[in-house]
Length: 381
Image (tube, rainbow, N blue to C red; front, side, top):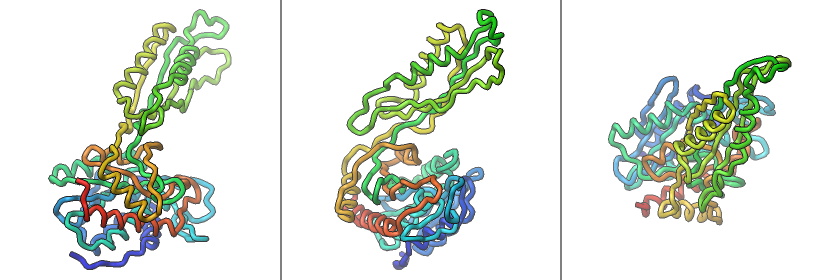
């Protein structure tokens, strides 16, 4: 086992930010990470799938096996920055850069925490993808398939997404809502506006269907989840003419759903509503959908309590358990082991001048190091 090596979490976060790894490009970010992990005694595996590079690193071979999971890819820079997004500048106690919040600083905190934990009775791993901000098909999903083929089992996992609100550790994600994107296409018959009886206008049918879907209350939520939501994102006819009834109208919407629903049940409900409207209007209505995540919950128990107690020991306050927000790669990891998300505050993620307080990186490192100590002292098995 390698001897302890002091790792400066801030310096490592800066080194990662300076690699412009806009998804799916890696730009050398995983090279930086892999080199440090090798110094810490990890066996590393670079796993490219398609145009995405990924990294799996493990130290130890025995159970229990604790995994830190995250991603080095970042969203595009966009406009409006007052600093160089890849310079990793520190100003007034804040680290600026694309990925500072989401989530290169958390990865640096992973590594710095592991460096304080030179030997455990069990295994520690890092599962790092370059595809979380992209299509999410050549990253965590395939890494997990690779692990399964090797016969490797993860017992518990912490994902370092920026899920906190004001300070590191104030919120613990114990689940996520599912997400489905829908597209509606209503096809009628084009005609002259002066002779509407000779056409079949798809717009009223689409408008009525949109109203029915948008005003329907999917549920009232439950103990761990807020009510499910349905939000329309686009309405499109694409008709520049003022004297033509169009032959087609389209709309798109997203459903974020809790564990009272499944993708199949929601898709059937939308299809039934569309079929009813098609019969009423005489138009043809097609529904297509893409599920990007299924709702899941890591039920409160020994693992979540251990994480909560550890955070409280460092910050003085137990985290709030939450299932709000978007999706993350935890939606894939939940199929193989209990998983929670614990990271920095996410107020600036994906924004111009993305930044995090330097002292929060240090605080998160303290939390992760304490969590490793508590976990291997009394594994929550």
